[in-house]
Amino acid sequence: DVKVTQSSRYLVKRTGEKVFLECVQDMDHENMFWYRQDPGLGLRLIYFSYDVKMKEKGDIPEGYSVSREKKERFSLILESASTNQTSMYLCASSSPLQGARFFGSGNTIYFGEGSWLTVV
Amino acid sequence: RKEVEQDPGPFNVPEGATVAFNCTYSNSASQSFFWYRQDCRKEPKLLMSVYSSGNEDGRFTAQLNRASQYISLLIRDSKLSDSATYLCVVNKLAGNQFYFGTGTSLTVIP
Image (cartoon, rainbow over all chains, first blue to last red; front, side, top):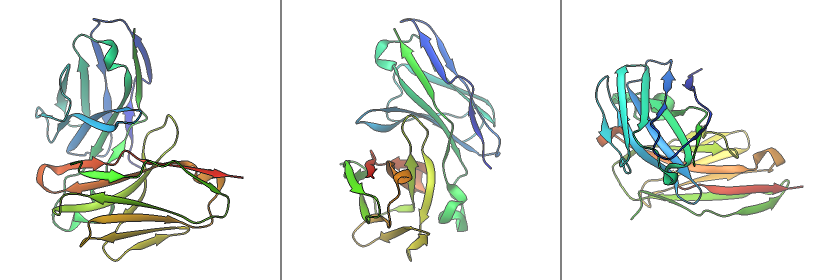
């Protein structure tokens, strides 16, 4: 079974604090993602990475940065937490679409259990 | 226009009922299609992939209509345990990204 592990499940931080959310996957997936999920807004992509030391902005990167020093680990950093960053954060991983793996579960995206962040 | 659109519901159905969800996607270059299930305060989990020919897994049937750019999920003989939010997910090769609907809420009532 694919395992995506988010080490911090529930955090309460003060406005202005620096916050690190760590994510590790054990399936040797090239792609890793960070999303946030808010009621009525669905999943929104913050950042993603196709390879070590590579990162791409998603739809809502402002206020966030990421780090991918090793293939299995993708970290999300809130440089200066604000109350509007209170949310559920989901890390995910997948293999890239390649040839015959276009269809079926070959490129399925797998999620960690989520990190619930409250900024006060 | 959103990449993926779903009716948010909520759908409230009695046990044993049949319920169907639809989802439309905007980009004809989309390659892979999935239904995910998300329980309250949990992460989304893969329910089933959606193949061009349609596919069935027990009480669940998924269909893909490329011409009209929609996918559907049919749940027969609904169980209380089917209560959850169902997310439509689309993947396309360019950019290797996944696009999510906002989810359809289902409550199965005893």
